[in-house]
Image 1 (tube, rainbow, N blue to C red):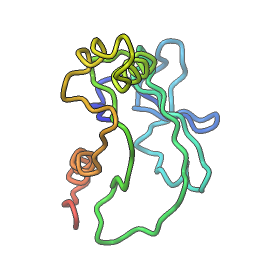
Image 2 (image 1 turned 30 degrees about the horizontal axis):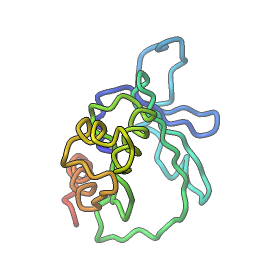
Image 3 (image 1 turned 60 degrees about the vertical axis):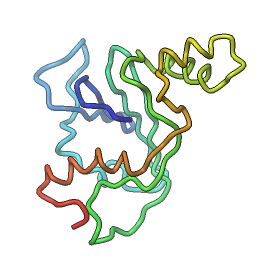
Length: 153
């Protein structure tokens, strides 16, 4: 999605909540489990496992995560790695998934009466159908270096 981790977020798996370590409670919510101490395989380790990811509690970007398939790890690949995807993620100027969905649909529909307004808002370079595995993997490379691994090693 291109999020830059500058807003609060959480992952929900069943009744369990994971997020950044935070002191006490926030906005009346009890503390979430420390996401840094919860290996992904221990909470989403089986095909069919589901999670909800909420980014930016003000705008409430909601993402559904479903484990569709487990692959054998390649020792010559630096993880995490993106193997595929579709459609463009939201621009940072859009406030919330509802606004983005409406604007995206209008921009992708040339006959819509607000097509041009939506294109202006998103920008001429925005292609709602674009997705680049290479761009995503360039952003993920940050995590390889952070863990002391070189990309592709």
